[in-house]
Length: 503
Image (tube, rainbow, N blue to C red; front, side, top):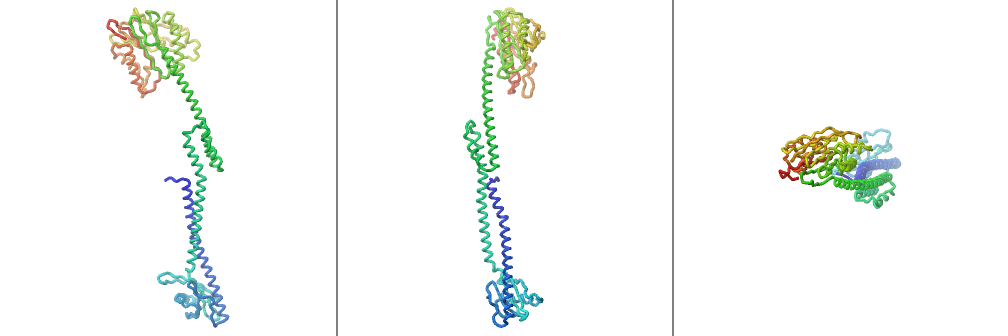
């Protein structure tokens, strides 16, 4: 069970009052009883002295000036146990019987002695405190006895007074506890309400600081330190929220710019192209790992009979790779209009990219020039993976070529190419390393063998269908895992017009 601070203070006051007040009441009653007993003994001794003095002064005549009462018995008796004067009640007789042995035992210079007489009366204990004295001249004894219960009413009155006083102290303590707990808990309650209102607080305004300003006026060092801590927290929260807003706005601006850049990049890539005579088809697709990618592909007709197509991968990812890709694509398009041999085109492109390349970025590239009329294909690999050639009978082989350096690292580099003839119904599938290096949730790579098995197991399909099958296979393998690299696939196919094949 949880208790609030005010409840704890109430319990503390109550426990303190009980633990301290109870023993004090008991001790005070005992002290009062002891005090009244001593006073009674002193009074009794004085009375005995007075009566003895009267006996020695005048032997005849009444000597008891003070009368007996229900709580005090006075009588004169001799050594034989006869009451000569004073109270002759049953209690007096009982007290006398108890005194006689004391009288016979008393022998000494001291004229006084005191004793305690206890007996049962009407099945209730009865007690008397007695003081007795002897007169040496007359040989008579004087006894004064006080009922031990004669202070009962006074004790009851004293107990009621002490109880009322304790109750008053308790009530006063409760009121004080209420006041103290209010002084303690009110600032805490206000701070709690202020903290609960923070999530909906508008930190651009000063409306929420009224509570803190009010609490700052309280003259309590602990409360002031807590208020200062809340002031600091609010100030830091406002600063943090302001920075978060600025950061979010900056991120949104960057996202917007990246979305525009992605649209521009996709717009710069070639789309569906119609080839004169419908003798071939070509299709490509890029999935960037980020908003914009560093992979590139391009295809365009240099003239009515010559198709130039490329697929490449820029080192790095994101915006820097995309910018380098744009530069390489623009240069390639420009150089492709000059009708230079493929190896010279690559050499010139390499020199242009290497010039002022302070970022040390580079491009791996597969470049090919295809003659529509003859089916002659010249291709070169600049640090890029060899594409696959799927033949009309369904078999698959790699288009190996002399190894060349990637573009952009070093200038004045020579390039070599290879020439083959593409037969009707044959297809060329080129790809970037984002395909083979795609990973599943366990970190296992898609791999070149898996791609080779996929392409070998397919029938002769259109370029678009083959493209979709490769991308679907890679996507199913990697599932929801984050892409680590751009994925780009290009498919070129010489149609078998006699077989009625359509792209």
